[in-house]
Length: 251
Length: 251
DNA sequence: CGGGGGCTTGATGAGACTCAAGAGCGGTGG
DNA sequence: CCACCGCTCTTGAGTCTCATCAAGCCCCCG
Image (cartoon, rainbow over all chains, first blue to last red; front, side, top):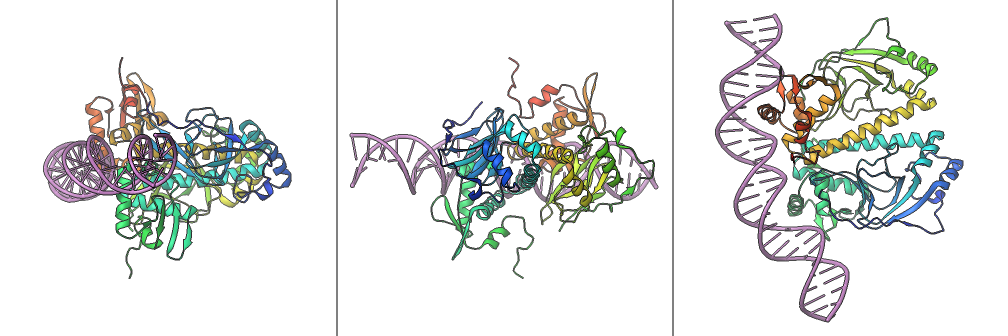
């Protein structure tokens, strides 16, 4: 099996002061969103913050994963690998997203830290026990899973029907929507992953991704400040190239 | 917007005797799998059996869908349509699968009866109310949704990485696994959908699907008794062509 | 027997992959 | 400070897979 070498997973348990749930940045949207104070106290007992270096493997496909986690900071990629080494990224997870696939003792895909990552981890068995008692967690986890399912099915449409240009435009828009910020001349955002990883996400080769980015730049639909930082001067114009919207004309 | 014409949805409420939950064929695996007798009685009050003709639209993308349902018999396809008419099937649902996306008031995709279909439908609002009280339903729905998510991500790998031959082999194996039966000379199964729909599912054109099927037949990896009924003489041989397994050699 | 839908098969071409080379860029050490 | 290295990224040339366009076949049904 061909597999790219990645640095050994080196999670570091963060020393005290352990951040309290009250001030947690992802409190509103994470799996604990519906928990009351008493429930947070319970959760607090089984949680631990872990840090992963960029490129570190969080769990490997097929591996028994002893924990589940919420992403506090950073970006986590989920990928599946075919026996001959072909890889497909099946998810890109941002802060407040949940990783670990509750109810699954064996990971169905690799989870890798695409950047520096901080997780709020829970022991799997303890989490399951708590979830059996707490409606609020199960309810939120169901919502999150349904969102993930919708996102995955959206991506099926991208992989099955869109051409290279549409794929790249859709990807750029997704990044801008999730982590971009408005500037005087449009939207500015940072690519959280390499060209090669974008290819794995879009079902394209690195060369095709690179070529499409160059073409979009030439067409002034995007501009690059660095290889990672880009500007979208006109969101609507880029969206028109993504294949999701009806109107191309300016009637 | 290009959209294939489909016969109007003509659900028929089945007359009494309404099948009781005790003898239900999908009792073990449906969303009600964990319900006790008392809970079934409650569910029974809000359920209704509906029949859909082959080709009938169950819900349309973007439409407000007033119900959720378990599939009792038949096959339901879920598809998304891009504005220019390109379609991607994002799920193929079999008996005991759940359709309707609880918590979603607006359908994210078309659901179409690929064959004659019988649904066990629940009014959405009433179902949500019951779920809020019954752990058992929510627990099972979470499991089902996680299974759907895993299946969708598996399909991402197919769409993003596999070539036409591998896609078709994977599809045939999936059908055989879900609804095939063993025979003296291998596995026999029925394609629940047309070549054109297979194309929509696999991100291929109907011509490519047809050509690949012909090639597989020529290679004696499958045989067709009718255009829909096929035999797999050697499952392992077909699986070796699907790209999911390491060993191709006969060392 | 004629019609239509689903399916098959062939010819052709476009889009994406593969292979290959080189440019950009950040880090490291002499 | 600069030279060198490694990695990512870009660009070019050639190839191949699959989509497109176009007939024609099969089979069921009236």
